[in-house]
Image (cartoon, rainbow, N blue to C red):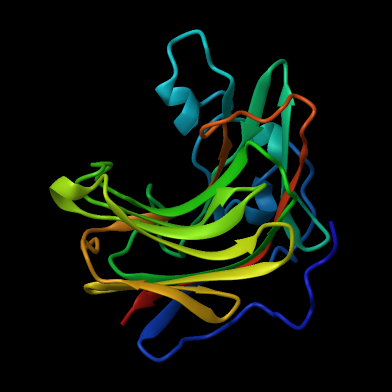
Length: 253
């Protein structure tokens, strides 16, 4: 995969109304597959799920029929200034990972909990049918759909990028979905601004939509959830990479 364009550098510093709480550009050193986060990145990153944890699709399947799951020791590495997710299958199981940033000062999970926030991530994904991104704010309460969900970027890697807000309350299964008709395969920057009563999504600096209905107002945390089989599993020979050049986060002042 080509390196990220140098011109799109990681933003560092506070912004009007936002206090920066996290910034990572993976330039502290390389980490081989099986070693992430390790001593280099362990203070700033955590893998949410151990090897073999069922992903969303596997949780929906009957016992004994698992065909996908999280396997960070077989997926995650750092090299050439990027976090690399090597998506592939072994023994009929397609493998993903779900790393999460740690905000400085956090002493327990969830590591980056806050109410209202802004995050921006520079990423690229190979075109891999059956694998998908669902990088999301997830409620600390784990009460879903009651406490809502914010997803961006999301989508099957062979299709287009989209953003979604799942409403809080009894209509949590309903959502506002914004589709800018931009495919995966190139470098992109996705930004979410979550404010009281309002969420705005930006792709490569342009707004793709604003949601004002059912906006979450309870603590949430951010996860780079990368998985498969929703709804169609990848072919066993399908493999490739998702790369993260940098990620920055801000809390609402």
